[in-house]
Length: 434
Ligand code: ASP
Image 1 (cartoon, rainbow, N blue to C red):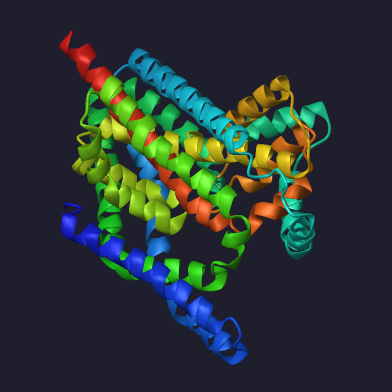
Image 2 (image 1 turned 180 degrees about the vertical axis):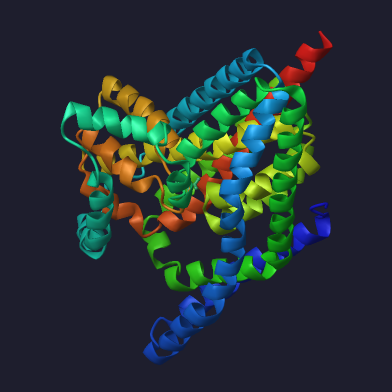
């Protein structure tokens, strides 16, 4: 099943039209409470369910697809040494690119200083308006954070090693499912060849069926993307964007640098690919990320397009992309570094070089830990701010515009995974030829 240029052009049209109609609807209903009520009802009863059908078709395949693609990927690698090599390369790439992204975010903030001289009345207004959201984020961040050492050790164990794989899957905890799939795939390499082959056939068929369901979702995509973007922009409008304009434009510019400079350089040097063709072929992945703001919801499309259009073999796509969707979030690392600096500038706090290095390290770690869902990094971001003495409640200032930035950082997050997959593909091909 091909992703087809025509269909992704349709999705792009849905995206553009959705944004335009949403902004227009927001502007037209600003001072008309009755019209605003009608708009709200239309969003909740029409746009929301259409968007949700699309999202749910994507989410529902994530767990079986992750399990099947990792297990079959690992078992068809054939030996555990190869797995170790791939794993080490992949993790090294994740940490390096996330670290570089955080540095880019911090450097841009130093250069432009959008937080200096921020009007105090705007700060007070935003803090009052988003106080409730900040409280619930802080609760999320604090939930289940044990105070004693044993509790913390157990929490880390729980994060990686499931006691009950079904429970982990039911709760959409990706990391334990990935770990189990890795162990399962590794175990398969050690059992009798014929039985391993039959299990692989089964897992491949499971993966193919999930990818086919993604194909169904993509048929609905142009309309669903229209509805999702319309819902966001109609409620959001452009008012806040004006107040935080410089901050938003700066971070969006950094995303563009990442996408159009940093990634093409990596693609050319490490993967020996024509970057512009690669980016063009990856368009359906970017559009899905932009409209869902979720790396997890984009994962099925990522795997499908990587195999069908980007020339990445199934074992590598099935191994690198699920890991990347949970652990490699370059856009998130960039964004977190930039927000910590922005809020510090707003409150006139100077961070020492050492503190900024701590920020970079924590951005890398939290980008690994953040869930690939809309706003998944925000609770962790509050922890990074607290660590270096920047008031976590200051996050209120940026919450109102975060959805726009979330769309952008999710694109960068999922494209970082594709660049890594292309790099691993090239490295493995070179090794096989040597
Ligand atoms: N929405 C992002 C993603 O899914 C996570 C985040 O930074 O909030 O990749």
